[in-house]
Length: 238
Image (cartoon, rainbow, N blue to C red; front, top):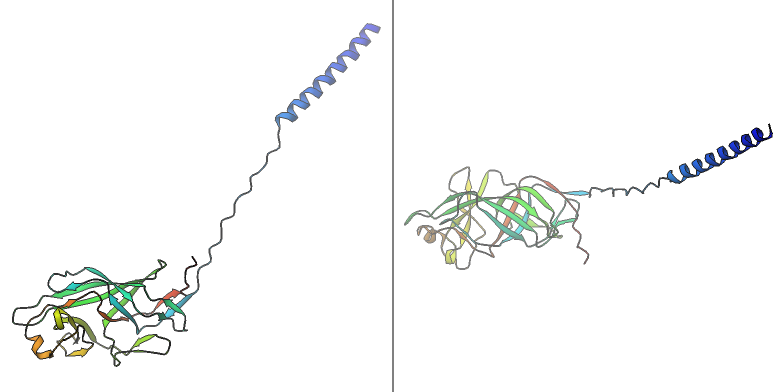
């Protein structure tokens, strides 16, 4: 009886030891799971936009050459903004040095002994030096005081264009170009903005059938046919 009792105690002790060992082993296997912190994505805030009104004129300078002798419809060319463009509330949105891209819409080569060459263009986009770009609907215009004027902040605004269509025509000095107005689809008189030194008498030049050659450095205006919205320009921090 005593042996049986001893065996029973021994069995209980061994059972307790096995239970404790199994619990320790299980506890070692179940290590606590540490969750890695999830990086929060930065919330992007859309910049405030400012409107540039329809009728605003960008003062630009040609960055290359185009000529009615070899230009093709669909050719692209670039111009550089020479004065800052302001929003309707006075913020600079397009700084000096921005790029305005133009598109050749039609080309009429000069005829020997006849009419001079013509190039009709439009302007499709503006890009600021920091890479911000906007599609625009712009037309060619001159920079005389009747069709374009600047306020005291340097904003150039055009008068009502109505049905005028401004094109480059041959006749400028040294193969330069004049800005011509074709009103209602007809052949109108040159409205001013003679480009190129020594243009000479208009009547004399137009009888020679010169090509419309718009050289690098030529300055003219880009008339905004539709308003656009752009963020305020800020100088990049170096």
